[in-house]
Length: 252
Image 1 (cartoon, rainbow, N blue to C red):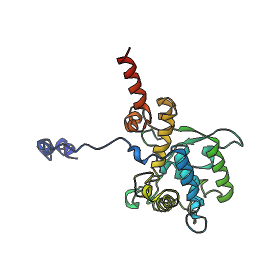
Image 2 (cartoon, rainbow, N blue to C red):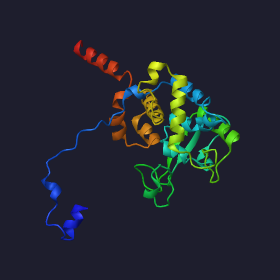
Image 3 (cartoon, one colour):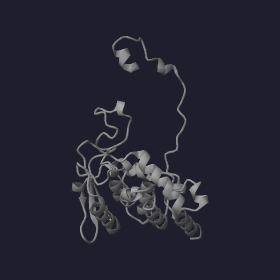
């Protein structure tokens, strides 16, 4: 804005250039303490189904499963439609992710809707991200559709009144599920503290399973550079491998 004011000759120079303050460094890497293992993920997803009345948790279990098994961002999972899903009777399926519905204050959106439909993060408006999904998630989604049906626009996930699922709603369910599935010490720890941590667990699992970084980045919607920088501390066991290689080199 100030640079534009200079162009319009409303200001002689940008006064910000005189400030020598530097912003504090922020941590970009994922805290490995938030990452759950597959057993904990299964227990948490099961616990979700026991939360709330009138099937409140059961309605959201598949939403959380998409974050864990497909590494979807919450806004991407909320926008998922039946037409985006290939759910075969057996074997692996596939999701085609092309829209996101991030939550914002209504006054800041063009439509006045708290969940305005947008393109994918870090991608062009018309880009599509294919994500292969394992049989476990295929089965969960098929059961979800059979039990709860679809929203008016084909969305898989909807509130009890047919609206878009609010972040406060699924976060409250998640916090209750943590109390059911985790030990008291784990509940007060950072372990899976947010639903978004399911995505971190998924990406970390893929990397530790030996899936090549470019493939993981493609499925997660990251660049390879960002992927390796953000998840550098979550590569379990790589330090031991490096130590063994250094020891072998020293004793050669």
